[in-house]
Image (tube, rainbow, N blue to C red; front, side):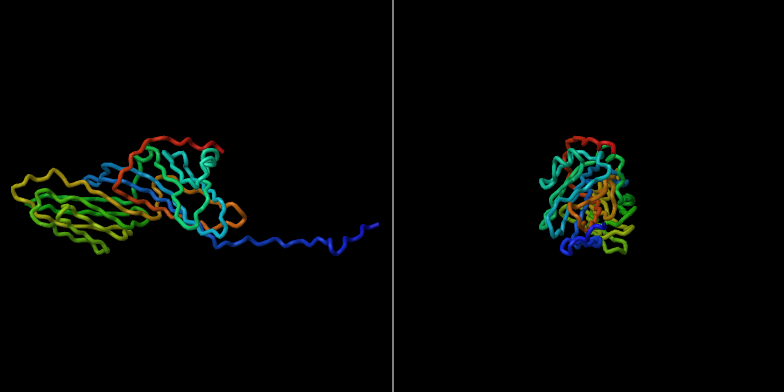
Length: 275
């Protein structure tokens, strides 16, 4: 005989498959590459140091751990982790597992890249200076060019010749930039709020007629932030929050040039084990 149907109270009702849950939560990651750069009068790098930082700003309704994986982790040297990052997970699984702070921006880690890699890095902003000395006049032309992305807060400073007799005359290209001369510091400072592709600074300065002609132009110091560019080669491969609902991930790359050099004691991080 056919089995009796189950009582109504015990009837099994098939639950329709739930649609993927959408989330208004957000994790904003920013990868900042800090360059310390000096350029000679030909625009060639005299010195260059690079330190990278990854920060996280989170907007999560439910506090839970978040995992982040980086590509080319073997390029890292002297990697320092925030206390919110699980040290053991990083050492054993090479994953950045952190507990978000919904009220503050957290610097998850900062690191340097291998010296052999750093020596071959090409910053996305190129400076082409020209200092021409003739007939008691120094003619100045400095051209800055972006190779990719765009730059913000470009700041270039360089000293005037020792033999100058009067303040220089300076003129910028049609972009919204400004150039000023500081009589106390004897420095010319050129600031460009936003650089899409190219900008030019031109100027002249009168020199003392009896002074010897300088052998070349000055050393230039450069600051800038390039957005949308990753120079060091280390990138964020994936981000995943613990739990069923995944937040929206926004990643922003910033290349920043600074003046302060931080001494580095090299301690290479072992490369990841093969999959």
